[in-house]
Image (tube, rainbow, N blue to C red):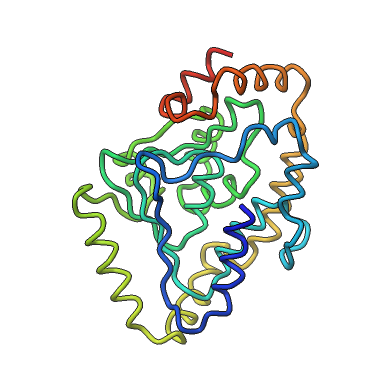
Length: 248
């Protein structure tokens, strides 16, 4: 998270860059959830924001997504593999999201961890897919395939997996050919229509709601520590994380 924050700070003042594409170097995963060990370490979690500035009153993950959302460039998430929790929140902070059909799965896993999304998930999802579908995603903590995600508006578009690189590359090139002033004008015009101009205020509402369940009560902390000791955050168990957590 601190490395992503540093990148975003640098990108924010990079006038030569017009489009930023986020993609994973890890096969099978776009980005995992926030480290579950922070469930029992709120002090350590807040320390991840030691170098944050702007977006006052937000926790470190909220600060990251707000900073990505505020970038002057168009941001694109190229999605393959699993993204849950904080990984999904990072993707939701981007302007455009293209997913490899049949090879991408999305979810907000926090409900199975005894909490609720607290890194922008409730606010960013609600803006994209509406109230009822956001409540469904948050309270079931289920995993969604690309067909459902596209139907909901969770992703901009699902494309055949073999075409993803070419599709994203072509869109990035086309947007990158626009004047920086055009990109800024488009984002400035669209954001108020989707609540983007009040995101920081709404994230503070999310932070206040998170305080009802985080830090987690001792019973949840005990359950999560047992799951961590049993290999919660290993690639094998992360692939079927919902079933793994349901054992605890």
